[in-house]
Length: 217
Image 1 (cartoon, helix red, strand yellow):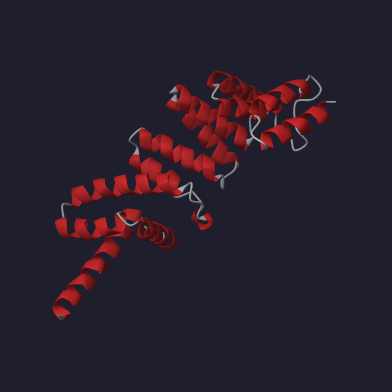
Image 2: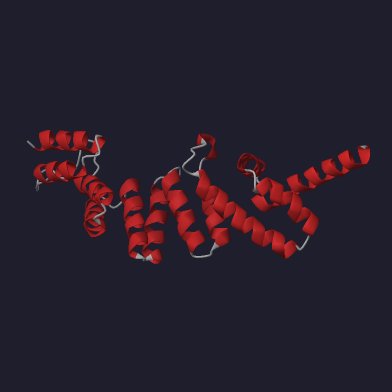
């Protein structure tokens, strides 16, 4: 009976029928049946449904229950961290995001969430370090806005300290072009350089090339 209700809950989830999903999960779970066939707590699925319904207190309670049942599950840890962000508890959110990436070092969502929390706490270098762990080979568009924001903010602080108007001008061309910025970021990771260093190298190259073109005429 629990397996049937779980299947119905998954069908409802796939169709974004969140209230039906919650109902079926409640029918499925009991003291003998608390996990799906791949060992994810049913409470986690219930938390996702409540989250999508905008019922954040219920979502938090479900994610916390899922963590009690399975404290090393990366998705459980990541979503519990997100729930703490919504509650305004940055310290706890960082704790669970860090545990999530410890359990799953290639978990992009958790790395990006950790970067965002650090950025919002004005810890730009810590945010950048987390950002560098995100797998850029996937080129997922949903990651890029956060990447752009963190890189631009950190780079602008760095350029302001350098106090070189010419360099800042050419670096600005790169920072204002999303494709160019992304390419320089990927190059910095490949070359194992800090993004700000790679940005300045590319900006100097552009300035040199521009200087040659001006004098060629």
